[in-house]
Image (cartoon, helix red, strand yellow):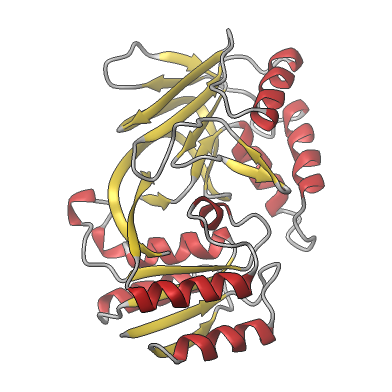
Length: 308
């Protein structure tokens, strides 16, 4: 088996020593090349080349951004067409970031050493699983995407790349973006097959549960969402403080399905279309993509094989 280990040396918990241990362990079972990323998009380029060269396995060692780049590289030749998905190299993940949402959702240990042991055992046993992904405006996402408030927060945090990300940094950004949204609060129109259009102010789209983490605490928006089902939608038509406090509290303290007068929530959706009256921020897997006035979110079952 031929494999490539893609390492982001700038990720929160990656170290040169950890990289060497991981590479040595993997090289005992596969024919391995190691690539350290040194610019934005490098991991995607490496994974795209690996897919074209017929590499069997690409292991991402970094945070959710690194994983997202690798996934988009592995599926780059599908051209955003779900019908073209298939035959991509398998994906392995050894967490090296701060949140590692995708890895946690798959049951991969947060500790890189433990995750390496699990990966080696899975390789030896030829153990892997098919996971569904989300596709939004040509961008694949593994755990979440969104328009509005959450994308504003992602953009705010991205501007502070010199600081290590933390729960407190995201909290401060969330409060700041709630009171001072950089693009205002244009209305979003949500269109779901078989449903009447609905107007909201922010929309969170999930590909799994939890939607994300605040430190070690999971944030549950669509508890029935999984890699085996469709997409989850959690959208709010009002962002007054009582509404926000109600749903933040429910998201942090319970896994029960949320309800509320201002809440639009659906699970297991094959397709979601969202139109914005004016450009709004758009994020996938915690990475700000840019601004959009329309995004189609599509669920793609069994898009990728992951070693777990």
